[in-house]
Length: 215
Image 1 (cartoon, helix red, strand yellow):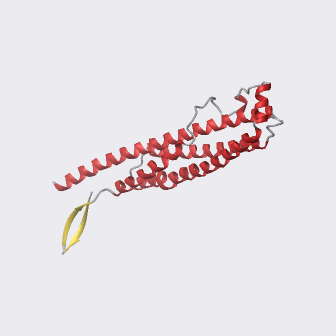
Image 2: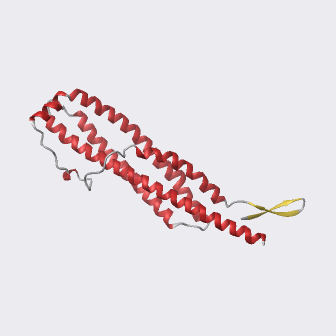
Image 3: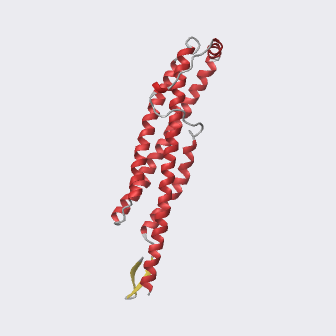
């Protein structure tokens, strides 16, 4: 891209990269940094296909299993409270990261492209998918947190059957959260690939335009 500068009464052609290239270069580093937080929940595969808790096949405990839960109730409750605290921190970290990506990178890039008459349908689609995925994660985490709170409030010493029933619900929802984070991570990766391709294409076009202007 060529712009004209005036120096000592003469027009001097100077070369300057397309402003979008500079903007695109700035958005890559945050992806690499924030992307590391998405691995927090990625530990186990999802074992059911929808969010309906009625699809869970709950296990019937035998006497030994009920006794083990009753005996270890105190330590189990401590572990669950620690899990709840850690999950809350992770929820804030991921939620903030998702919102930052949408507000500071996804949306501004699409707006800039539209203003430059270079709308990209794939980047627009990815932005919509990210918005939906962020909302799905938020709603699912609320449901998960409610069930985790219910689980913690149960008397596992005297109600081992009810406790284990709710524990299976919490496990199910936690695995769904893992799936949600994985999905969002894939969306971010796809967006980064599209940005890289866009930068490459614009750099080539910018170089071609400069060559033509030099002829």
